[in-house]
Figure 1: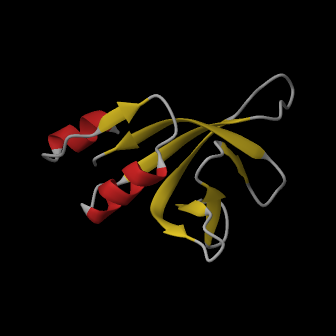
Figure 2: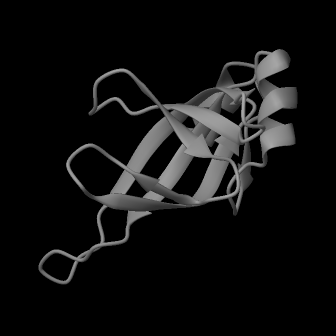
Figure 3: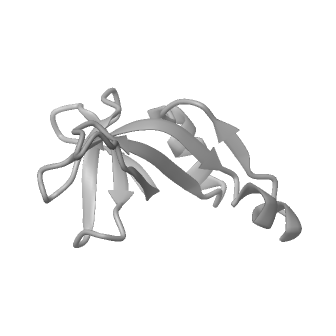
Length: 105
């Protein structure tokens, strides 16, 4: 993904952690994509599957909570994620730890 982005004249970068609320705000305002790299918390047959999702944006809820808006291509619609929590629950009951981000593509 990083190499492909470079061939398209972009400057994608790997960040070995969850992207912060303010980073999401800055990147999305500048039309820079953010991919989420996640690892399933629950083990099945000794394996922790990987999963990629995309950040769509961020928002501050009426109660003041900051959330990151995520699109999961294997789910329906968008979901909100607490900006201070790197464990993402998905609709089938699995949870993915957001361990890295690729941004700037």
